[in-house]
Length: 199
Ligand code: HEM
Image (cartoon, protein in one colour):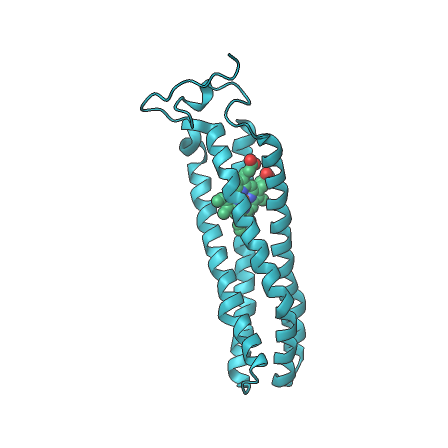
């Protein structure tokens, strides 16, 4: 009788029809949920650290080194070489941050049940808005600016020094903005985490 799963009544909120709180621990899912969630948190953090490292590398190494190269042709060659690794790393890492965050959300919703929106609604809305902006800026950096420089270099398109200078400036400004928004997102996430730990 231990494995008995009650039938689904109507107007309820659990996965099998009952309010989550009425399920004994371990009966919501046949999977080792806690271990999976812990692993997801670690991947969320590792991917976030990788993304931040790639942005800091852009700001502290790529930007200043490129600015120090006076010849625009040499400068573009340098940028194209650097972005071939930096770009996929940053976009890939950000993808992992988003996916692992989204996967955890289902479990958080199950844990909080009806209190989910009351307890987590405000920080979650702010966090997801910040994350949305980070994704847009990261996409602009990678595909709107860096990838265009790489493609122009590969296709031997003539260099327009003024345009390249402006692209490099926009790259650096956008990267600072992304970094500031990530820090804000981390701060909001801490608020979210303290709500979850208090639960
Ligand atoms: C740039 C984007 C993001 C950043 C910087 C970020 C940062 C963080 C940080 C620092 C934590 C750990 C808090 C702690 O345990 O002390 C965290 C946890 C979490 N994140 Fe994110 N995150 C991002 C995107 C997302 C997205 C898009 C989602 C959901 C769709 C998400 C969902 C979660 C959840 C549910 C937790 C709590 C897990 C738990 O403690 O049980 N995150 N995030």
